[in-house]
Length: 221
Image (cartoon, rainbow, N blue to C red):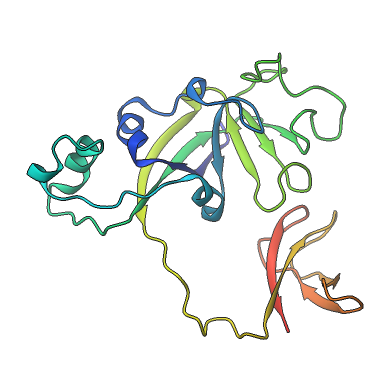
């Protein structure tokens, strides 16, 4: 139950096996939030962990290459390799009733331990998923960790390139500020936020779709 679509970033050399075998939490290392499959709502989060697939040189030249099987699957039917591409998976995830945490160790609002034991590969109360809310060990993006491979199904592959924004997209005098909504905050609320420049406070309106605990970026001069 409680199915959602989330993103998972992966390296090119792992993608072929994932497509046919799925995402196995047991193969994950012990990360900040335990041994599980890590997913996110925001593409900027998963982009931190991926590496590029530089090129496909055609069937003959590509044979023996580490990514030959993947390239053969993705690019042999009139699909062009764009060069320096990155891969992400859009996964259908059955979160069930997830456990929420801020510190990665205790259940949000309690002193109960999150994990069943020191291996950190299963939740103490059972259930498939852990959600790290903003304000604790994660600052900008919520993270989701799933401990049961049957709860995660890769639906789509996203192939993309990184593109530098035009130099004139942001005025040189414009600065950016990361704002986290306080408890009880709703879209449309006006917040008074202190900037890094001493003594300067700006009024910030919470944009649609952003609620308490979530973070957004504003620009100011």
